[in-house]
Amino acid sequence: MSRNIVRSVRRLSELQRYKPPKWAASVKDIPQHFVRLAQRNTPIHPWDLPQLPKGFSLFIKRDDLTGNTLSGNKVRKLDFLLADALYKNCDTIFTCGGLQSNHCRATAVASRQLGLSCFLFLRSPKQTTDIGCTGNLLLCKIVGSKMIIIPQLPYKHGLKQMMEKMAKEELNQKGSSVYQIEVGGSSYTGMFGYLTAFQELIEQNVLENFDDIVVTAGTGGTAAGIAIGNYLTGSKLKCHAVSVADNTAYAYSKINEDLQAGGLDVQAEEIIDIIDGYQGRGYGLSTQHELESILEISRTTGVMMDPVYNIKAVRGMLTEMKCNPTRFRGQRILYIHTGGVFDFYDGRIDTLLASSSSAAENAQQVASWGDIDDPMPFFDY
Ligand SMILES: *Cc1c(COP(=O)(O)O)cnc(C)c1O
Image: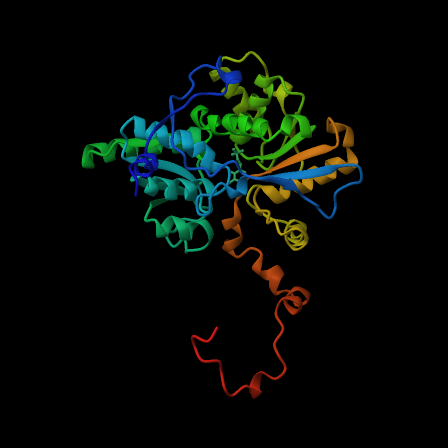
């Protein structure tokens, strides 16, 4: 290898100096560093959804493609959060979420890539350590994260304090210094992942080519970065976030917290439209219609929607386009796909796939199966 090439290879764990986009320079407490975990720029392409109401044109930004085991929106937040952990010389990451949390999986994988230990505090509806090995949990286990099964405590009132107590014990017993990441990675530092993604949108000509941006909101951290970027640039785009959290006020209050932390004198309600009413059976739960929509969209467009976030947001967006079209600023819509593909592997869609019509379509057997008595030799492809 020539010396030039050797010199240009960066170690993943190398902290890079963060220079905010010009339009964000006046924001307070800008992080100083990032690590480059997310693959970017993620592509934008037309998306021919079967139920798209007439008049609208729809494109999709593929933030499900920020990586493969590191995939989805959480990777952009971790670019900043894990950089902060490295900068503070921490060697252990604590974070929390549900048993099938995409955030916990992405944190577990990214921590390993950066040489950090990772503890996951996983909220379970049942008191058991027998959590199985499906979906995101499989990946968390493969990379060897430590898992602590906990009851369904709210983060700020119970869980945060429990984790801080355990972090002190880790320090006293093993000398580990812990960096604690809040639920969903949605701290003020994590918000810079999507504030920076807004600059990527600008470079992809989104300001000229679209009227509206639609994304899903859980904690609202992703929506916060996009809406704040949109506000700071003075862009004419209208931002919408379809809430999948049981309490929609949560997203507005999270965005308001970030606005305050950034010293910005505007209210969340003025910079983003949070769309309510599409939570279905509640956070993490699926209706039969939602699962059927996942299949329909996968089968017509080849793009997979996760059951917890994106399918609810897309169904909400389509319903609003049809019943409430003036809610949108125009008709050129960009949908941001936030990932979550491993949530499929928890088995929830299996029953639908095994149902008689779907199964008959998927797998047929040759009639002459029994007559084949000379099977193909093994390596004869
Ligand atoms: C966490 C998550 C979201 C929600 O992001 P917030 O920043 O918490 O609003 C959306 N989609 C997927 C796939 C996620 O994992």
